[in-house]
Amino acid sequence: MHSTYFTPDHDTFRASVRRFVEQEVAPQADAWESERRIPRGIFRRMGELGFLGILHPPEVGGAGGDLFHAVAFLEELPRSRMGGFCAAVAVQQFMADRHIWAHGSEEQKRRWVVPSIEGRAVGALAVTEPDAGSDVAALRTRAERHDGGWRIEGAKTFITNGADGDFFTLAAKTAPDKGAAGISLFVVPADTPGVRVNRRLEKLGWHCCDTAELSFEDVRLPADALVGEEHAGFRYLMEGFQLERLCSAALAVGSALLCLEETLAYARDRKAFGRPLVKFQTMSHRLAELATVTEAARQLTLHAAWLLEHDHPAVRECSMAKLYATETAKRVADECLQCYGGYGLMEEYPAARFFRDARPHTIVAGTSEIMREIIARLMVG
Ligand SMILES: Cc1cc2nc3c(=O)[nH]c(=O)nc-3n(C[C@H](O)[C@H](O)[C@H](O)COP(=O)(O)OP(=O)(O)OC[C@H]3O[C@@H](n4cnc5c(N)ncnc54)[C@H](O)[C@@H]3O)c2cc1C
Image 1 (spheres, rainbow, N blue to C red):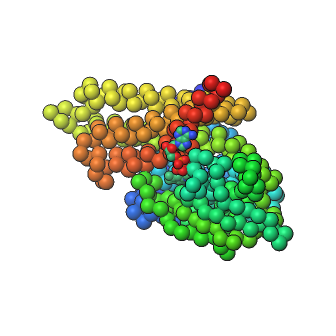
Image 2: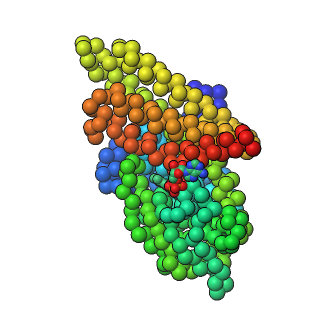
Image 3: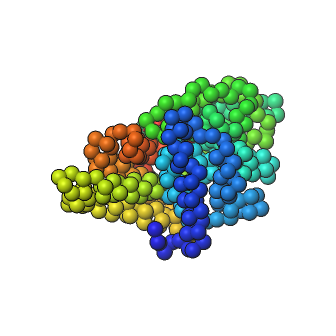
């Protein structure tokens, strides 16, 4: 794990995250996956340990860390053996409250960011709609001025922490005729009348985390529910995309590293034709190839983190890191499953969950096609 990007302080932090995840989270994985739930207590515990405000300053209860603390944290989270736990925690910490922190009022920060750092409130970022996923500008949820406040009508889907969360950072159109320039962000308490969880969605992987379809019917919000400036929501979302992509890449790297580690241990242990699998060159070379592409994904991710940490826009590098790391994690999970033979398909072995939990990474936080489109546009103008 040694890397020039990490200081001894980052390494100490990483070790504390690993200890926590291995001792307090991973033993619960089978139960939480089958119950399709993450208990609230684990958010509070992470809040106590200072793991939910890594980038926030100590004045608001944060750890005052930098992006390499965040990357170390995200690389270790997959040791929970639950892609869904990783997603729920990453959304809570790096997506739902980032826009409120960056652009919200002092009162919004006090009411939502501080409790989410403490693990007392769980947040969700509600952007995607049934007819607007990759094309964010096409979203149709409407926010109109009403009685000195706001009235919201619309629907959202695929929202992580959507059913069990306490608040949504919601994107809505305040000027429907202006496309992307007519989007604003709002903070919406989940218990506001008119906010309804239509259903928890059953999905291929990430079983423990809730992914919900929501509707907003005649939802009345006070004037101060607007986050930052009216019509600036798309810009805020775009600014947040680089951190989202970096988080996604770091989680993908962490899950690929763990998947390889476990597969190597299995291939050392399992014998065929009188020898450990790892002694077959086809096996060892396959693992060597996967270790190489995982290392390349890691270095690209760390490079993107360095650029972002040093205030470079890093749109190209964050998009490349997201694309390459998530596609690599998908490949690693697939080829590692093959190394287990039939056992790879059995639920009592880790390969099956690695396989299904690697799959969402190339779709969420911007699909691989969209990452290629962004990189291509930057290349060809
Ligand atoms: C498990 C999970 C959790 C999620 N969590 C959240 C969340 O917390 N908050 C939230 O707001 N959203 C969330 N999402 C939504 C996610 O961000 C979207 O699914 C994603 O952006 C893709 O949108 P879509 O599903 O509507 O697909 P579409 O946009 O309909 O795309 C369908 C296909 O067309 C391709 N495509 C689309 N446009 C182009 C183009 N211009 N060029 C080339 N190909 C294109 C896509 O790459 C994809 O392959 C989540 C999704 C999942 C599955």
